[in-house]
Length: 158
Image (cartoon, rainbow, N blue to C red; front, side, top):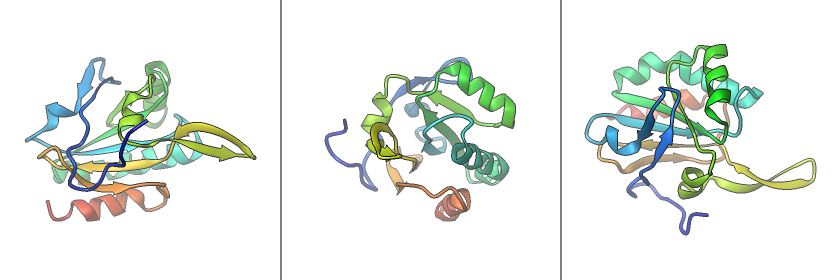
């Protein structure tokens, strides 16, 4: 688990994860080039995660104009990600964090509860990372409705 909660202005923890692009992606490769919207979601092809991902899909041209890449992260494996991308025509990269290290580094691997049962899982969260590699915005316990628009507004000044 992350030792301290990340804050705006902190350097974003770097990572390398397998991606739907067929190669490992690291955060460092975007430094100095692109803003990054790093969104953590619980599970491929579930109602909230699908709605969130499709919202990013639909707003993608606006993110492109703001020099911003979208990266989705969950614990699903690449085969699951590939089906999710195909089914909903997601035009951005999904990353597989099967060992939960990146979710832990970002402090989003948390105890959750459903139907009275507690378990560990991803707390739906989004980090906007500037071209300088620092965290510009943090959204925790994300509500899916209107979320992509909220992030686009936050990127407005870039």
